[in-house]
Image (cartoon, rainbow, N blue to C red; front, top):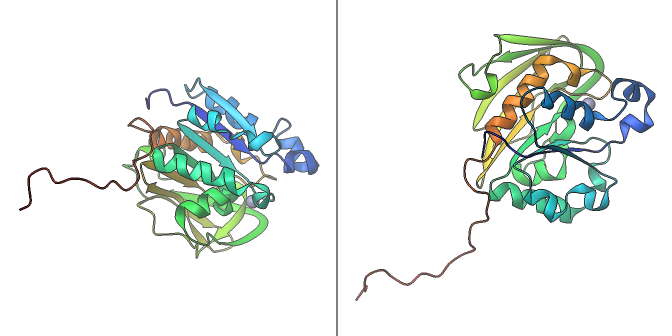
Length: 244
Ligand code: ZN
């Protein structure tokens, strides 16, 4: 199953159509740029969905045919319906992988799944980000050097109000001085969640080959190894032997 995960890339798709700077970098949307990039990494089953579609493109049927969901959102987190956010959460608990990108840290599904505020410090000055690989043995770090850099990025700084990650793969340093936990791995229920920080919309981050490699690695890591299915609810069991 993990050899060929069925990928669904979800994007708010608002900035690209409302900010000319973003529209020039991602003329067909961040979701399309990611889909094209992932196609060069050996993935074949790649679909996209956006906020404006019915049920945001995240119908029961769409999620049932998804092994790993990618999520990019920013300004319109509040417009994602609670019902859809709950559906995504349930699907993750049942085993679907979730790769949360950049400002998706503040999305309804990620906040529901972590149970925390998910707030950060931030600064939008376009400064150098050095992303340190602090778990080189981790599958998400496969093929990477000790660190990689993005010349211009938005800064996210600690404290990042999330639960301590099960595994921390990347730690970012920013020119302005802050640090940030940029590659956080969680398990919730049967599902794996990878949060990856870079990807501010006014910089060409998702055209960066190393960033694309990390996302591809993250998808392979998050892909379910078991059949995706919900656990039964509380079950009242009879004893196997008589208890007396
Ligand atoms: Zn941003």
